[in-house]
Image 1 (tube, rainbow, N blue to C red):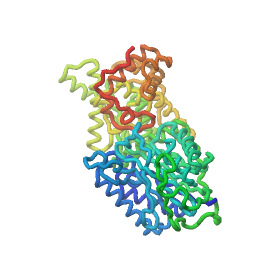
Image 2 (cartoon, one colour):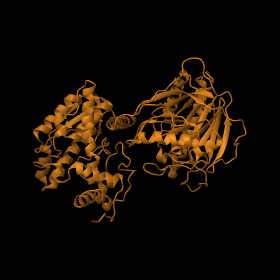
Image 3 (tube, rainbow, N blue to C red):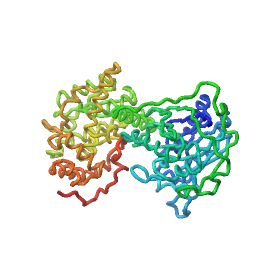
Length: 593
């Protein structure tokens, strides 16, 4: 057995920032070297950020990625880190884009990993399994690899794999067993979904058993548009033993000593052999690849990465929403955010998320009362502002609404929507004047049934709770307040905002329940229809009232045009609105009763 000190760099790259991402690699590689690491791993597409989407089709971007990789290898050597093997994800290509007229079969853009050592690229690997479901479109962008790269480091055979390779049985992990490797490294850009951490460990264990080898799984963290990556990097032995696990939603250096079997004699499963799943095994011996300490590690304490236990669902979702918003704001260069504070639960939760993400000094909350706004709504908004320390303002809308009504003959819903649109105009005016990003506050339940006003309460550049069901919004509010009490802080959300019946307050005495089923009834139907793709019969068979099902499905189906225009927001579920769920707007199909 040989002991190898692994360093898993759970970091937050930025899409398109080749220079900044390379700088991150150099900084964290230096930290890893200081911990005595002998092999350093960075996430999938580390150099380019992930996902790069249609940037793949720009040959200039592909060329820049390859040039940045070569420069990074030289820079690591110049940093006196050349003896330390560093594995980095990047964008490669061995042919024109598949969508171009000069495309070649079996060649094109590649989701790739490269091992850097002594100023050079000593080994590369192309991702074999390309996901093409949910938010993933990798069949659109990449050509799959047909080889398994095995690198011999300090007498240990190490197989290189990327993300989806781990989530599919067979392929690289079956080939790794046939190749007799001691370690499989898997670099990831695996987006967050609620409870995905509960699935990840069993999947890693299955692949470890399939490969008959230890697996080092490193995942990125951070937000990228709608996606957020939670990290949750880990090391698992062939028998399923969890050796180390990193925390979620933070950058982290996981350093751990792993005992691995020495490589077999050279010549076993030599180059060109197809050991499993049609993959060629390509071996690379990296001479003198292990910096001190060399295996077995005898001097100094054993490096132990520790095991961080996953947190409760509400804590996990809250961290995801905070990180997703913070990175969207900061990576896009917005100085601050502004949102309407109605005194209700949705705007209160969004405000609390924004303050946790950015600090109260970067959050502007605006009360926009009309003649129908209750006194408790105004006082609850002011109370939230006092609790959180955000910049609080009051802009009454009634004079502006009256001016419209003096020049137009409107009634009923048109007047209700006019109020919402005046509020949207005010928020966008503040955005234009002061540079804030407008946050919209509609939850997933409202978006599902179209319970919003286009260009009114739907106005905004980002929606932190776009993928959060209304019932979960309440749970998050209660959790956040309880967490504040537990830590000795001030609960940010007024209890009155949590306890009162939800209302848009666009007409006298209006309540959400006037138009919608109670959310405890509505949300399970929506979850079954949207997340589970159940039809009417399946929903009724699940125990839902047929008449309520018919009403809800009709509302969902006719609101697609509204959702298509909604702001992006952090994805936390298995099927968020947007790329996860792609339905035609013009669509005659209905689930008939």
